Image (cartoon, rainbow, N blue to C red; front, side, top):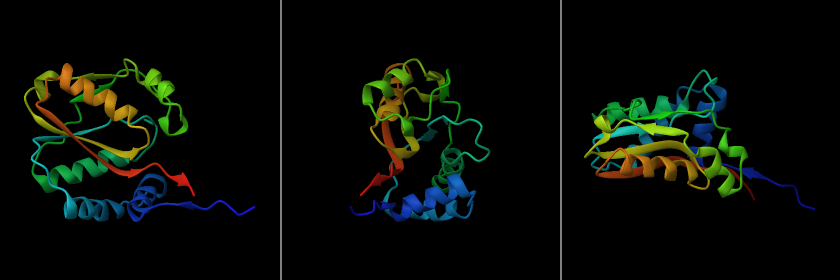
Length: 159
């Protein structure tokens, strides 16, 4: 039987360094990669609130702050708030279980989102459950004009 090899794309390696090795120098490289291919007409960045609030360095927040500076737009950490603790969804593989864990997990501040083109930003994409739940809130309750999505990398897979 062949050994399983876990592979990360280059951006995934940068995110891993930032998230688990406190590699703050990875932020600049991540911003450079983002800016090289993407610059949508958005009015604010909305970072996805973290699941692991005990983590000293929050990679989503760190990259969102720098990206907002580069784009010259607000980083709206108050646009979406987490209202209940959820498990880290990287360990929940069933989509319905992910959605159940996310039920009533977020609130939105319409005063800050109404009529705006927003960028919802997260580090990992696996099933889309988290970003789908937040996008729905931003559009329905937050009255956003549009929500674009940017994630840094897809969750690691075994190959």
